[in-house]
Each structure stands twice: as C-alpha cells, then as structure tokens.
Image 1 (tube, rainbow, N blue to C red):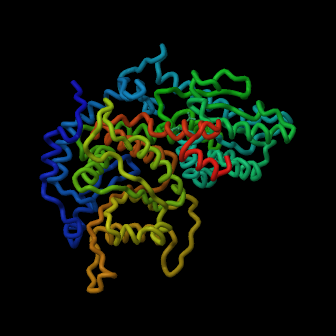
Image 2 (cartoon, protein in one colour):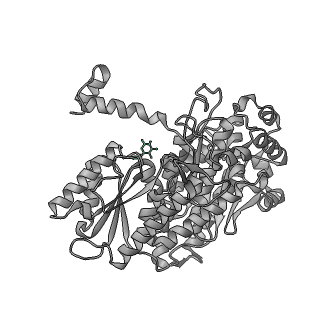
Image 3 (tube, helix red, strand yellow):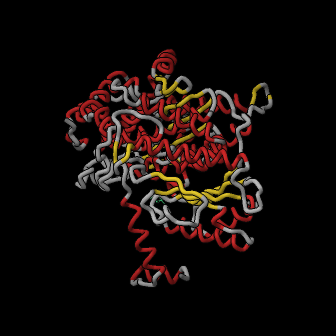
Length: 526
Ligand SMILES: O=P(O)(O)OC[C@H]1O[C@H](O)[C@H](O)[C@@H](O)[C@@H]1O
C-alpha cells in the first residue's frame, strides 16, 4: 500500500537531520578527495555519468537518504505513476509522459484506448508527415519545398522543444541529418513574432501551432499574427500550418491546418518534449530517426530510474541529495551550469520543469506544508557564467548548490590549439577547476581574497552531446523533479499558480479594473 505522507512526518527525515554534517572542503582535499571523485559516481547510461563527489555527503548521509527514499516509497510511487494511477490529484489526471518513450509497466488504458499505442501512432503520423515534407511530397501551393519550420507556442510548448532543437542543431549539421532550420515564436510581445517573420522566407515556411489546451492567449494571438503575415504575402495560411494539440481542444477539428497531431491531458506541458509537442518540430528539423534516438535515450534513463538501490539510480540520488540540501542544509536555489554552448537554453527549460512542478506550498491533498519545497533554478552556460554571476556563487552569503554538465568532445569538432591547448580542453579545464574551487576554497589573509569553500556541486559527464544523450539528460531531470515532488508530497503535475495573473490580465484588457490595477493600466496606456 502506498502512503502519501508529508516529509516532516517521516521518521527517517528526523534521522537524516541528525546525521553529522560533512565538511566538504576537508573531504575533497588531498588523496581522500581523489578517491571520492572515483567512488562517488554512477552510470546514467553507457555514455553518461552522474558524479556527486563534490556534494556534502558521505556514506552515513547516503545511508540516511536511502532510508528516507524507502520510507517515502519513491520506487512504488514511480511504479504507480507509470502503471496509470491518478497521480495528478489537483486535476485528477494520469501522468503518462514516460509512456511516449517506452512501456515501463502495465498497459495503460484511458479514454477507451491503449495509451502507449496512441502515442506511438502519433509519432508514426508525424514521421510520415515529416518524411513527405523532406521528400517534397508535401509542399507549398507553388509545389516548392518547405525550408523552414516555425513553432508557435509558449511555456512547455516552447521551452523544451526550443532547448532540444538548439542542443542538436550543430550535431545534425555535422552528421548530415539536418533537414530544415527551426525558429520559435512564443512571447505575446509583437516584436517576437515580427522579428521571426522578418528573418524567414514565409512562402517556404511551415508553421507548427502548439497548444495542448488550444486556449492559450499568447499562442492564439501569435497564430493570428502569422496568419496575417501569410495573407499579406498572398498565401493560403491553411496550407502552411499544422497543429499539435489535445484531441479535446478547439484546434483539433479545425480546417485551418494541413494536419493535426495529438498529445493529451496526461502529459504536462513541461513534460511534453518527448510527445508530439517536441516530435513535430524536431522530426521536421532533423528527421524522425533523430527524434527516435532522442526517445531511446530518455527510455534508458526511465528504466534506470526504477532501480530500488539509491546508489544505482542517478535521478533518485540527485533528487535525494537535493532534498538534503533544501530541507536539512537550508539552501534556497540551484544553479544549472552546462559547459556546452548547445545547452544554452537547457537551464531555461529546467526552470519551468522544476519551478512549475515543485513550487508549491500545499501537499497533494491541498493542505499547507511546513517545510521548503522546490528551489529557485537559474543558470547559463559555462564559461560565460564564470565571468558574470560566479562571484556570488564563490563568495556570496548564500550557498547555492551547482549542477554542472560537461562533455569530453565538442559537437562540431572544429577547434584550434592556442597556448598548447584546444578550446575544448580549456572548456573542460574550467569546469574541473570550478568544482574544486567551489568545494575546497583557498585561504588568504586578505579576507577579500579568501574562499571559504564548502560549496557543493555535482557533474554529469558525457562523451558528446548526441540525440540519445540529450534524451537521457532530459529524462534524468524530469525524473529527479518527480522524485522530489514525491518526497515533498506535493502534486508536481499541475500549475494553479499561473492562473491568477491570466485572470487579472483579461480584466485589464476588458477595462474592468479598479484600485491599483486601474492605476497600473493607466500608467501603461492600456
Ligand atoms: O500548451 P498550452 O496549453 O498552450 O500551454 C502552454 C503553457 O501555459 C500554461 O500557462 C502553463 O503555465 C504551462 O505549463 C503551459 O505549458
């Protein structure tokens, strides 16, 4: 039987708080430090490793975390999720994003269909469509090939797919699988749509309208913006647009699109990169085979995440160390720092994934919780971040745990040797240096130049960022966030916190305001 209890009612949580703290600077120094870096490491897939040597944990803390993971029944809750229980209590929905990339447990039926079959069928339909576009069987009205794909969507219908596209663009170019350039329109700021439209050849562009609900104001506004531009160019908008939505949305049956592909209410926006939401744009840009490799990487991590042994389950381990840092050590934020230019938008995606999932003050039954839940997430690619906000990370008054990501090889492979090292070596040297600098610090008589150390980090290391490693990386963080939500006993799959602002904005636009809202409306000339 599964018990959904608040973290502060669990005996093993009290025990965890009483375990002696680890002096990170001390344990990471000298030979001991070298041994830790070798030992505190676990495989995510054959190509990716999670190394947690520079986290403030030791065997005692890890044993206490394993006990907590067991008492919180993380493995059982994950199984309940992929076997189709109503895990999203707020919206009374199943949570099935893992099913888009593999069958992890029982067959899941909902709405009278086998859901795995439904997702696979959508992937096949998308693959067929993309192949026809690439082969010139689906063209514009003049019979010419489409050369650009533009995704219109916001939140989960933008951030994940955009981050994934950028992550693989250069890989695909290098490996001969690049088919079409992709662009993204998300913000309701007219400058977003206008700038994208100005940068493309609309006559040879295919637009993917992505909205699960089919009611998001920003997205529908941008759709009209694009339709206007197509009309002004003398083009038939319905021959340039496809839709990705849920079958119950107002967009599903419209004649305004060349084709419609479906996901459903059991896939949260921020978990939708492996559904049709990511599938359409990524298959058009790189071909369906590349998208399939991406799914295969995610499926591998979903499998590993079933492991009951905490030390062999990287997503669960990462989650539990995060809980320790948040609820015992009291750290407020986590920085995501990929040493990979291709992952430039990955921190923005993780921001939504983590903060929209676990930024909650009530448990899954709607009762207030008495402990901190999701941390603030932010980040930028290294080494750029080093020359900007790392000052606070090294010497500021808050300790911010760090999540590094690094690859041995670059994607494009073009490099130069300057002062006896390649740029790739310089990049990797920097991430190694940062881990040790943060953990060990350096004492100096001049307080201004003193580094206290004791600043924890972990690193995910891979050989190269490929479609498969990207899928694995994505699933790692999705599963980490899911496990943390289980520990905090929150519902990680709804987002009521975004509603109030939408309601008030509508009131402003209808001129139904008073008080402060009226004055702000006047100040902004609405
Ligand atoms: O895909 P849509 O239904 O248009 O939703 C787009 C986004 O907007 C909402 O407000 C939510 O905050 C996001 O979780 C969601 O991804």
